Image (cartoon, rainbow, N blue to C red; front, side, top):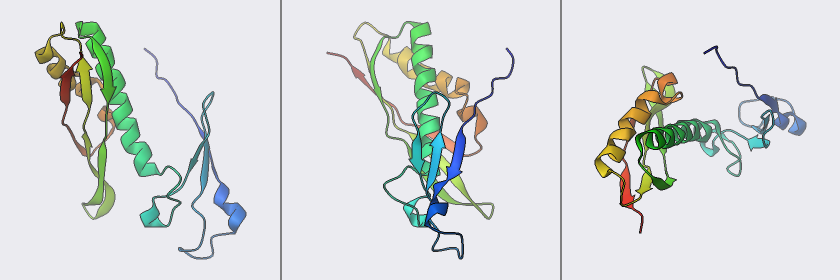
Length: 155
């Protein structure tokens, strides 16, 4: 399969509030547009003087890991005959110092997966590791990550 390329358009809209005259006063507002997708208004995290009402890069990072893992899990479940009726996650990303540099040092996924009563619960759990190995985003990151799944049987 040939390489696939993904793009977006990113613009610092904070410039409308004035130039960067120092490290504390400039706006961190960003407008992101995806081809064919909805625009996204972003900023830095509030701890870094960003707008808390906007999505920040750290949130986008954990969202990428979580959503790619979910979609990979659902694919693996469909292939293995495990009938998933619901999937939700509340991922946590930890930002900290490692090797003298600030970075996301750990992502913990906390998926809650509901399967039908005629699905194999052991197989459903095993698919978490397979999804981890096959997730494009997980294969692209350097930080530690863990999965703490909870499984439920649909009523």
